[in-house]
Length: 342
Image (cartoon, rainbow, N blue to C red; front, side, top):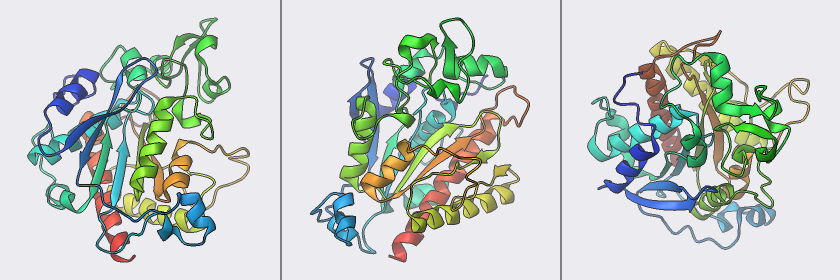
């Protein structure tokens, strides 16, 4: 795929972080394989008068004891790409967002004036690639047009007998490293899939670092960017959340459905409030859930179309990036409206 705006390489991230002028670059943590997990920050961290962690503050029936946020407080947004290192769409999306914040244009030269003009109203925490180990293991820079079976190999890998390690069986052994013949890009070098770490005693320091960041920052809205193969853009249902939080997520879900309809882009509606127990008999407490429980913020998983050569939908690189900018703009608008109603 020839698209100069598709910045998904680890070298692209390193170059961008070394050349920030408006944002602040730092290394959040080192990966299991010794690679840097970069964080770009925009806007100053505010003092929310913390007296307790989020769980304890909820136990006191007063979440303000964790973070006392009034109407004037800047919303804190955390956007994370590459939790599964081979899901390159989110990496390219965050990289183009950083480019916009730095220059007023994405790598295509396109302006998104609402985002650019309102960025100063937020504390933005942007991680282009949470899993550089998995990204380093992927031998291509785009999955656009990659055949479905090859896509599975790149994502989940293969077992020792050479058979493909398909979803969801790729989660049946965890950490998966010793059972794998080829370790797919889902996993860090220790074979840990961050989405299903043991969050009460994390196996991966990457998972621990992300949760620590969300906790320290009292994140208002966290978006975990993923690739949904050949499906329409959608938000999977997130279990183990308070009903009020689910209702807010559904409001955002409906907002995104309308934004995609107006742009003529496919969107898959998944009800964020209720879910059929027969469909999800054993709902997992995953990384997206965990971020809410340490920070109290909305926490959602975004599944992008990946443009692969599968039986379903195939978006172009431009459409994939367009969908990400729809997401970023609607996050901005939603977060500001929520803060105004606080």
